[in-house]
View 1 (spheres, rainbow, N blue to C red):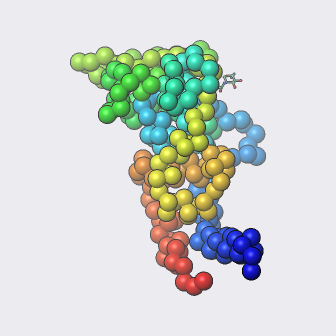
View 2: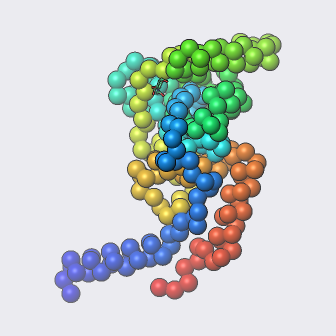
View 3: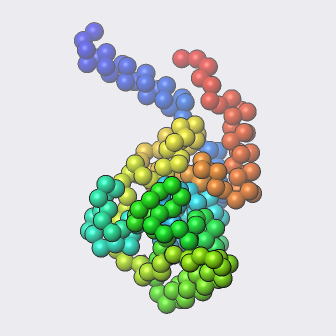
Length: 243
Ligand SMILES: *[C@@H]1O[C@H](CO)[C@@H](O)[C@H](O)[C@H]1NC(C)=O
């Protein structure tokens, strides 16, 4: 047998083993609101520290269809992780306004980070971790200003550092920063069938599981996903029984 034939056979065996190990959820969690809906999805963008964390903080909410790690708030064209210029690490949220509102997203924004911290967030220090609410239109600007005032009255002894900015151009972060929490969890990745990168970035299920991986799901959703995973594991996954 020549070398290329051997490589070919090994490749086939690897592919077969890989697909035997891959399993998909029997159905999606929850019913996807993706596509087919007559009302278009809306987009919100927030900066609240590391975009790894920010994606996970919003991904598991009812009504959030998709999240992405993006660079926003700066003027540098085509920012990159190692040279993002004046941009902030941000999360782009696509949501169904019939299920969750911009104001509810604002509530999650405030409870998911320390808006009083200047020039950083938690252990992450730097301008790229600043806190920003991006708004599109006067109504969102008004909601943002009102919620910031409310947050300031709650925070008597320190100034809320959050900026409110009109949403301008923003840029997707590199693939390795997308769904970062989920990618740290090979078990969950395999559970949804080791999706290709582009599919992973579009997937509502991956968006939810990214929040789940970071333990940031609301309790009810957390339990629902726990139950589903336990069910799959009980039915015999992921043991490879024979080759
Ligand atoms: C901003 O709002 C306008 C009008 O509602 C909408 O057409 C546009 O898509 C919005 N931009 C983003 C980034 O969501």
